[in-house]
Length: 268
Image (cartoon, rainbow, N blue to C red):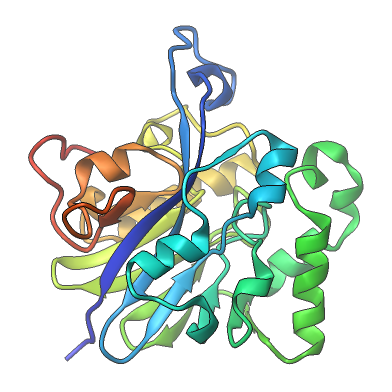
């Protein structure tokens, strides 16, 4: 019997902007289309695994983002102590997915070989590419490599019963997604294989890419691994909080994506 998990989408930051910034080639209507920033906690009685680590207030200030609840506080609201987390999957090394290193002193980080080669290689000399990475966060991960706290993966691998990582590329060279067994089926935490549900529509990719054909194929892989389109969770869409039930009454900004979407908006 496969272990199953609760899966929490925890919003920690927000950015107001319009649709033309969220699609390759822009958007002729260009209405409001803000981004939310999440980390994800995968929890059962045996283990807690975090997917991505977000960024801190200094990075928010530098990049013009708004912290709505620091990552540590969001985890704490669920009774999760950051300094007790033992395993973290980094979907990719962009600044908004791989910061806050000091919060997790016990954690072992799961990263694709290709991603570490990418974020420490010649591409980072191009400001349009390297600018989406945070050099201190990359350096912090390198220090963790030397400290024996990084587990490298080359492709797809189960990291715990009912939890697997899958290398897909596209958005970055070593982009990986996470497949989780839940009571309602296989949930795929797609991270930035699609920032928004709307990026899954043909011809509407997000404009930050390493390889467009690989990006399109990554989405196909993610949807194939999920039990249904409603089991795919995008990386930055405010609709995640609108569609899925809250973690508990009175706690804003945290959704249970292991549960069925609520009737107020279930189409993906």
